[in-house]
Length: 468
Ligand SMILES: [Zn+2]
Image (cartoon, rainbow, N blue to C red; front, top):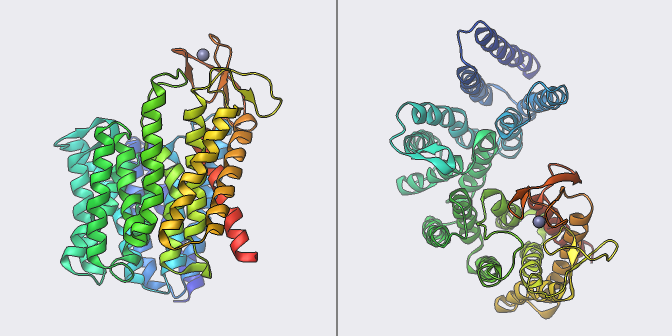
């Protein structure tokens, strides 16, 4: 059968399943949860079949892309009409087909069995994990909203599919099946629909083809120890520790010690500065990094180490990696060191005095901290045979990114006013009281500011390297 006819057939099958399941839910035969799971697994079966019957990957990508658009439009228009809130759970219906699009475009022509291995844990493990987790949890991880039995179910399903589909030995399969399990535990609601297939895409392509099994095993162990120590020191929340474990394993396995050192400098100095200065400062209560903060600070790092491992674009991705870390380190150092300033800082926009910790606030001592924080990361390049011009490039990019961070904080970042002290912040609680929304984009919080600022710093370096 031609791809055009198959496209229509699969469209009808998936449309029919969604319609039937919704009708059964409306009649009260299926609960909302059962309806969701039936569609999740049923669509997974159709896609698994389509993987092997279609002749061209782009046809499957187009089919899934259609659902990305339809579901996103449905969500946004539904939310605009006040039908339901757009929470993490509901975004899963957009991220599920998006993962199919991304993995299909990158793997279909390379290996369809590998492609199925990256998607199957999300299609079948995810649903089984929540089913088993609700019935017989064994032990609940309250802060993660997951259970031990659910994690075991995810692990076993991943194990079976990896065993059958990927060309790797038993030890590699046993260790690789940990990746979708850890990612499923890290993300609640719909985000695991994207995180699990993307994590599988990266790790199954790397191990053992590009990264030897021993390097992967050692990386897993070292990252595990670091994440555990950070969790015990309360520098990370449980989901933050899980994301750190996966990203840390990737960075160390694919990049080695050279890529580990700069991120450790960021991780150790920023945690230490928070510990040292937070006691005196009254900015925010001592807080641990959660999964989203780790992603905002380390997501680009994971992307760059992956691009480097696959030799994409023919540039040295270590330099933009260094720049991205220089930005986040510069930001942390200026915040923590700036909090020791005796006088109030000024707004970066109009240089009016504002309370400490305000969005977009700058001070002389904080700026000095930012300059030093960027330098501390940039200097690590010298240990690995880079010349001073690389240090200067990363240092400069780090400071520019930090400036972008302050400008975003003063303009588009969500702003809340504290009625007690009169300051404007990016937090919903200040001086132990709820704050009032006064401006900025509601969804654009501190994690987005950090992510965009470090992207700007890194992109500047990529352009510099590409066009110099
Ligand atoms: Zn206040």
